[in-house]
Image 1 (cartoon, helix red, strand yellow):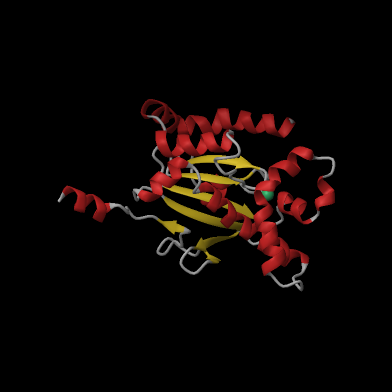
Image 2 (cartoon, rainbow, N blue to C red):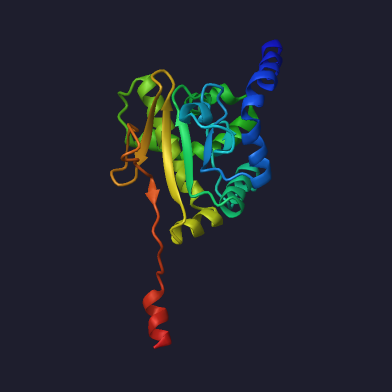
Length: 232
Ligand SMILES: [Zn+2]
């Protein structure tokens, strides 16, 4: 713990004095984070570092496997974080971020490894669809790293689907308030890949001129013609 406490001393003595006005403004005005990021709790995947943003800019929810339980089965911290970020903070973008060498994904690929971790095993059931997709839709010839990458990327897409089951997200998408992003961080190269919903492929995130998105919502009124006819 020594270097952790030393780090805090450095923060208190050197960093905080320089950023004091930022912290005080964030308390006075309240936070207005740009996005909700749901990422893995893995110590090597730090959303604020990858995106080089400071305090107040990201609302982050991290858990093993960057999992979003569907709304019907579990009410917990992830559900509350989503609802608060969308309803109270008004975030316009939600990112689900997976990564390479993910221990949770390895657990899915080696079920016996979870025999003594019943809570992890139960949590990872929310990723079983991704595992089934990789087993049934990908070639048997994948090597271990390819299989792991495929599983982690399919898991991001599965969690985006779970995200849509949350009422605040479903309403945000229908009213054009929300954009969904699926990212994959390759730790060993520092590369970020983004899921492009138009082509259903992960592509490298190169610059900010074109940001591939999983789902760009647009306002819709599916009953518009019915309502107009009734009014007429
Ligand atoms: Zn992970």
